Length: 489
Image 1: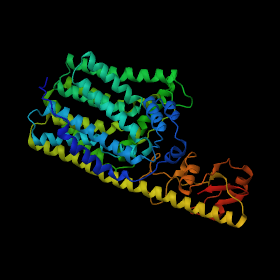
Image 2: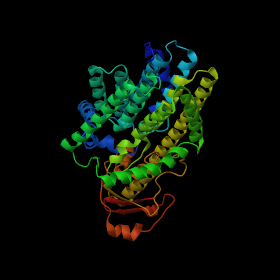
Image 3: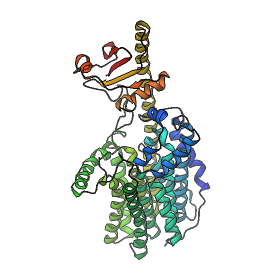
Image 4: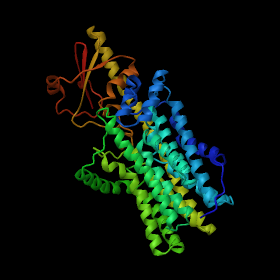
């Protein structure tokens, strides 16, 4: 086993927080997700019970007690998420260095730091920042997952096991997707500590780490059943449903690897990661027998599979990027293995260059996607201003005051604005793309208190059925007494 010389987290903390701030700092300005407007008016901790996020329920209940609206205080919570990601980078880097670089060689130190940073600075973690009302809970989930890695990696004593299990439960009770980060980093560190030898100690450590994640997941499912709040996302354990989800996950891999769900240029990442993987295969072959190579391949298979494992049991398969952030931790795990077995200076230069490319492209794309996000928010605001102008004109001319708004969509509704380049799932979609966000968004920007009203079928058939508009039009508005019937183009 490698001799470990403790390395203080503070050695990396400042520059880790700075690089995270450099990447995500643009989101400290006010911005809104499709959920933000509803959250602003209807902040309700019970929503977290439905999603089995019991830590979030407790925290949000406390925030509501002190009248702290997460949308209003989003800059504070975004700052906490920035600091949390910086802390995670520093913690994992310092521990990895204690194993692989006890002599504190600058080149290897830099390589480790860059590799770990890719896990937390990427276009998938970016989506965590696009939901400012829950950034605090993402912070809790990822910090607890990383602390579980560090605690359990330092020893297999009972106290380590119990502390790791405690942190994992806090992470699962906050946001389940962070579990993959725990498993990937723990198994990777175990491989490195045991010098890539699949010996008894390695299997003991691997079994311990996997049991922590498995027992935590089982306890989460039990809590779902015992604390059923209704309308939640319960696990579906039917074999046929699991097989169907597995097939859909396999089909999903093409979209994921080719262009990272449309957020990366096509083929770039798959080429860079393939080159890095080839280096890893040749280097491992020099330090392991073939059976060892296959064993390590099995560990990497587990690392990759854990990213998608929770999705196998979901009622409805929803592969938003915020749920598969472990994808980038998997790439970082390959980089850490390369750090551990690279000997020549030239090899380290090649490896750090590859990960610097990945990191740099991610940062640039984060800024571009963020720019799209702000433009989409601006588009929502401008459209709502046009709606409000129509309402005020009607109120002046008729003497009626609009109290109710009934909304439908035209036959080819546009989920994003024309000038938005990066759209996937809920990322950079209009606030009108979800039923629960529309009226709240209108009220937020107009300071009115419009109430939602079901669309009248006769009005719809007479004015809106089969209509398709590509721009704002007065034909989309039908006023009747105190109600606006609106068709969103």
